Amino acid sequence: MKAIDLKYLIAYLMPLLALLGILAGHFWSYGTALLAFVILPLVEVLAPAQGGNYTDEDKKLRGSSKYYDWLLYSHVPLLYGLIAGFLYRASFTAVESWEVVGMVLSMGVVVGTFGINVAHELGHRSNRKERIISQILLLPALYMHFYVEHNRGHHRYVSTRNDPATARYGENIYLFWLRSAATGYRSAWKIEFLRLQKQAIPIYSRQNNMIVFTIIQLIYLVIIWSVFGIVGLSYAILIGVVGFLLLESINYIEHYGLLRKEISSGQYEKVTELHSWESNHDMGRIFLYELTRHAHHHLKASVKYQLLDHLEDAPQLPTGYPGMIIMALVPPLFYRIMNPRVPAEMRALALQS
Image (cartoon, rainbow, N blue to C red; front, side, top):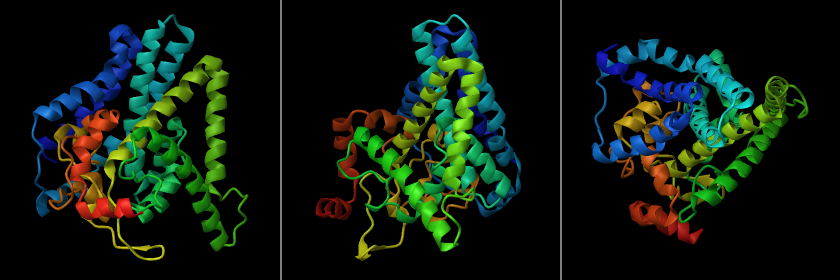
């Protein structure tokens, strides 16, 4: 491991600021949210994107180091510790309403980044323990179905009309939130039903992941209600909603307007680097554990985050993910900047379908 690899420790600023907001309150309550949606976008506008890939020797060292894995594993106690601290502070101490709003936003960002984003990385691993950690990290967002739909749905149908998580050309982010969340959840149930049918396993059994995930999420909410009351339960749901909306916002910008050609009925051309937007802006790469090198991820999902390459032919975003999310919240601005960047043949496909 080289000194430069310590850069990923910068990502811990998010939970650190969230903890400060819980303990100190006042304007610190908004610390993580301001970091994510004000400071990082400004830094990425001012700093140029960094391309370049690691040498084979560096990749060998990075691939064999457990440091990168333990960075992810540590998110479990940190995430749940912060949630417990936030729920206690918001439920049992005197806190102003405007402070609670800041804490909810900041904790929602933590749930979306330290939770869902890391769950996404570990959910692609072959190690069973890492997959379980992935599911544990999805729980606070109440989005455990993502484990099913993303791995067996999104990666199969990405950049097609059959993929709930692919934003259509001209679709605004608010409508996308509703469509992707609803159809993604329905898709996860369908995927599980088909899997069990093929294996001749009863659909309504404990081997149905969706049933198991639903029960786990209900137990989680009941525990929170019994410990923190109805107020704590409300806040737990709110930070979950903020967290999964952050996920859906990232989904929106990752494949916006990019479509694969349909070769025959239900059969599409192979996924290439042309079907994912990429960003090489450093802050987004660090805080999202290289998720922004998304094209390589879709070519081979099993590649660990520290080994992902920048692909020159992938369509490039004008700024990092944090800034792109802010831009997407203003649809006319987003369309003005992004629509001309969508390859002409894909725009034509979108208008035909």
